[in-house]
Length: 454
Ligand code: TRP
Image 1: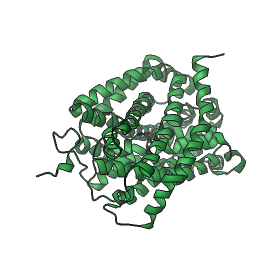
Image 2: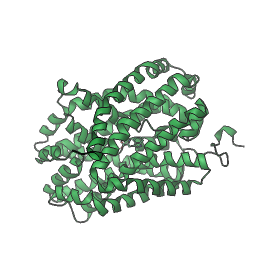
Image 3: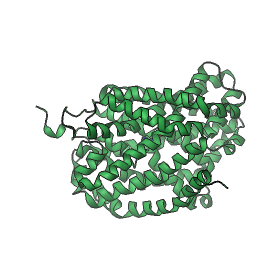
Image 4: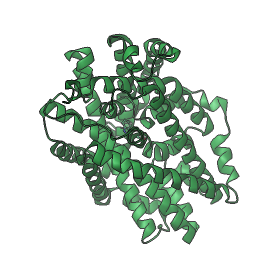
């Protein structure tokens, strides 16, 4: 007889579970590792002055990311429900709205994430068939706008829906177990290759030379905190949802450390491949030209100038990017899917199809206008994720009954949990309120520039 607590809120079938600890870890790391680690990280690092940004991002990953990650794991595993029902389970019905904000955030992020995912698919295919275009800037313009962009977005979203329809063990876990090791191998291979190119030193210098003055601006801090949340998939219940399929004897503290260091490690190695490649091939001028497109312009240009080797290395690079994007998109869709399975009692397949279709439709704006994509990204990250992270922090720090006892299940007690509680009650919320407040002018500026230009 399955235990009653093993059932989801719909109570019809026993709740799905991960098949193994490694399956969960690959899926969670797959959620964390994605476009955020490569596309977003590299354009922010170059826009915000390199190493100073990287250092702040690491600091925020540890001080803000780790505690919130453990908080999400604790709620998810404890409640064994999707985000909305999980918050209601521990906090009462009034907290449903926070879960609803999570689902809305997932919707917003996946709407443009799928668009960029489509671009990566297109570049991967082209690398393996016709090669990289000689005019990389113009080519990116074609790929990233109009029906080209919409078409690849639809293909990418169909893949995402297909995997999520397969369920936790047979869909998400199976894909992540193959995809993530492949991604790690490709990245390390390319980083080693880049290190051996003449002139790569300037890339490392740019990436790793620390300039304290540049790092200590509010603007860089806001961007680094947003990136820490985005990259770890925090602040909207994605990790919470994955944790809801965990068995009770899992060791949450250990998983927290593995996930966050794997995620930071991948972002760091991404920088070790991207910047040396770009500088060794003399493409640094392209980075500043277009921030969002930096990765899709400077790197293809570098690959193109490398001839045949560029097609191999570049093809592998974009395949890794597709893999990362797909395993992250899966986790975003899973939030929407698990919430609608809980709320409406839908079957998984139906929830995945309808959710995927809705997200694709909503993302069509971003497929046609890159400034709307940029706006959606700022709103989602700086407002929804940082705000959602604040919500989770307050919830676990102040509302939930004895979160430490729940987090300890499966791992035994340690002093760390006491520190965790203090961080969640005082340090993290104060830091997040500060960051949220200071991000408002920039986000508002973007809204104004689009809706009331001039
Ligand atoms: N973390 C992923 C990346 O770095 C993106 C992502 C997946 C995400 N799920 C999320 C971001 C949930 C925020 C919330 O590309």
